[in-house]
Image 1 (tube, one colour):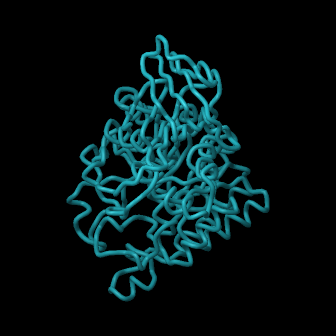
Image 2: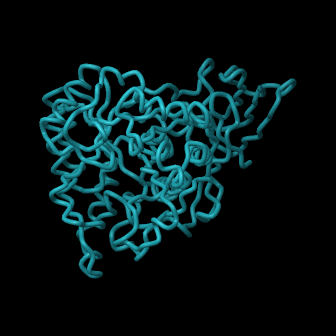
Image 3: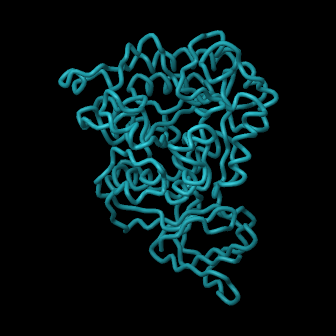
Length: 423
């Protein structure tokens, strides 16, 4: 198939130029102005729209194998494509956990069969993703996994994490850590803050996150590993990572749209506001925004975590942890960070497309002749209201339900194929 995208504002790295892009046989064939459409299979008029390297989400849950009643790789990657993503990295919260060559190949077989975009799975750090005990055989998994994570479980034992970091440093693989000290959780399920106290809930303290980040930064400094911190939510976490970077530690981090746009006083007695880590105080939110602006936070990732309607219908106390996010992430971030002047559009593209590729050594990120055509087309003038009933994801629980947003992906091309179109 040949595809011609005409009159787009094309991302150049430094800004945008008005150009045509001709795609042939999965690759960008020609870049220029007034490229003729003779013999082209599909032509898109992209006037007033922005063509960018497709987004990358380094923290999603596609739920297969093991939990296909929540999401499948087919439905999850279709939702990602709708959001403008051409690559995602699914976490190892699966059954069986991808803790061996045999188990990760079970996941990869489904990816190869059903995914509509590029999918790069994580392997777990520990056997059974238990957060302790025996570590996986990193050597055997290094070419099958984008990195190693026990997401959903913090690695509790210092010696286990140091052993994992030492091995990953030797193999030049990323440790992507969910940071949580189990003994500090004390049955909590939302932030231990004002809303929690007013409504009689059990709180999760910020120390349960940042104390493990502090430990891991020390271990990363000792071992030299590339260490990536998942879904940071607390102001102390930002400060610890900022100081570690200043010391030369190879540490990067991500946060999610919900942490950047909401605080605990925005919570409602509804499972769609429950995730782990929780939405924290307004001070935490402002610290995260500052971390985005000054470069402490490298990546915006969604932690897309679909559950069944029944699992999310039990209020804050009883619902499963996790919300969906790939179909709303760009709109939320463009509306709340770019249109308000907090960051530029190019900075947002760095956070959602360029930096994830750099940190996890993924291909793409440039629009140039000869590059694989992994692209998203953004309509910044598109105004829309978040309606979960329209999601392609099987998950419907989003704290952004009913929000009026600007900016939407309208075309996704992955490996030269049209995988989503809403022009």
